[in-house]
Image 1: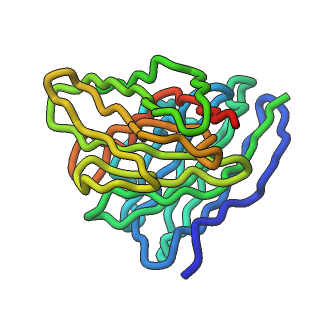
Image 2 (image 1 turned 45 degrees about the horizontal axis):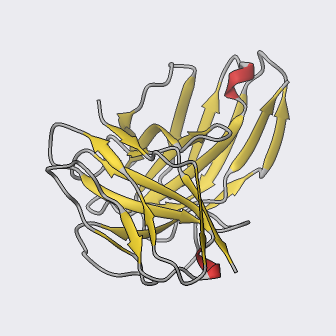
Length: 112
Length: 111
């Protein structure tokens, strides 16, 4: 059984650019959630995907979007990057009927 | 909207002393509460959840709905307990609203 893996581990982008982060969920998990963790803060919920559809969203603007694929892996896309988007982005997978989330190691995004 | 508050950013105790990490929440419904832990250079992982009522690594946490608290306790701290601890709340079954996290408490166990 493999855990949640995220790529890349680090990324530097320029303000205004677009970025795609990737996540492979834990084997057997059909739900993926994304979180943003700014320095010194707890993770903040961005959105959740279940069976390839977004079924929950936190307080993030539409320029944060995502996809989930048939193998339950997922992407987080952020358009028109802003300096405040600099953060650690965490992916978590879980089973739909359970709420225990297993987290990846995160992608550190720096916007300059 | 739900909120989780961890009043202590940093907590330092000596090995063998009791530990209590505070967590308070605000939510109008019946929440599910969790404690997550992040050891140095490791990923965030679940420590315990209130519905299981387990003791994990000597830690326990009781949900007090009257005080809207879910404090994490351990009677005798060990050096390997040093880590970042996050209290989290799930607002509805299935977790479609995701987890709402507190800002975390950095626990340092001194030898």
